[in-house]
Image (cartoon, helix red, strand yellow):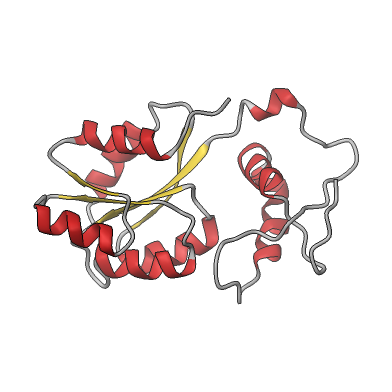
Length: 185
């Protein structure tokens, strides 16, 4: 199926499906469709899919939600990946060690959800959230931090985060992700 959009071509459903099912074959097409100067990760409206490769209903079951994790602790990123990927509908598509890297990866990967640590080097979670909401406003953000106070929760909401979750309660992270990424079906 081809839907024109000013010469660009990437359908969101095809983008998600092909990125997860046949990534190596379609990644160059997807990256070229975004272009270096793309101000956000909103995909253009359609992709030209080679004849005979249209996905059927069976492939749709393979589509998962993608999650980007930004935290300066490698051990915590590994733990979060393990917690999140226990749900077969969630896939960690990338990791960042600071807010600046999270912004770069969000533009490239277009995740369905971004989890940000508050305290990171180079750029903290608040500054990253502010910029992410400006360039990719549709992607929900979760702040995952050691510090949980009513003031921080208010500040996180003010910069565009859907929730602030304490690292001491990882089950609340999973509950928040469930709330933000609705069940497929």
